[in-house]
Image 1 (cartoon, one colour):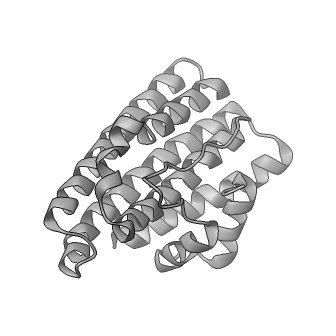
Image 2 (tube, rainbow, N blue to C red):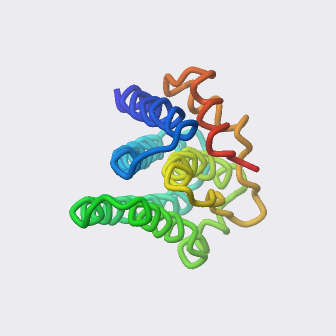
Length: 195
């Protein structure tokens, strides 16, 4: 059920962003995209948190590593709460594109903060790859708003030596979530994910 909701939100965000990129967009459209992005991020984090017990049961990571990952996801959820608040304040202040760009940039900076990522560097590479998959979807969502607001796409967080997943590696997650391959590809295209 959560996966279907995530899929619908991500799809709506990707589909509404594409036409604005081609024809220019208003601050109100950026505001809408920023608010939708905060929802997508929250749903992605909730999906990741819900998957943790099953992934641990399959042996992808140990109980100690699960605790580290859960802590990072809690931090991400707190950052998403701050993003929601920032978006609300930006809307109240007149819905300027730059304000929403600042909100998502602050979120992305917090998510990629080396101090927050330090504990994740000691988890095994397969667990790191799974975390980076979740973060890839979050980064793609953030970059839709960044692109709409005229900013430069933010890189995905780096954990140890495990590389950020290529867009092709995120595709199965998006498809599993119900996003069509075509819509996912369009979101990757408009945000220049991985380039």
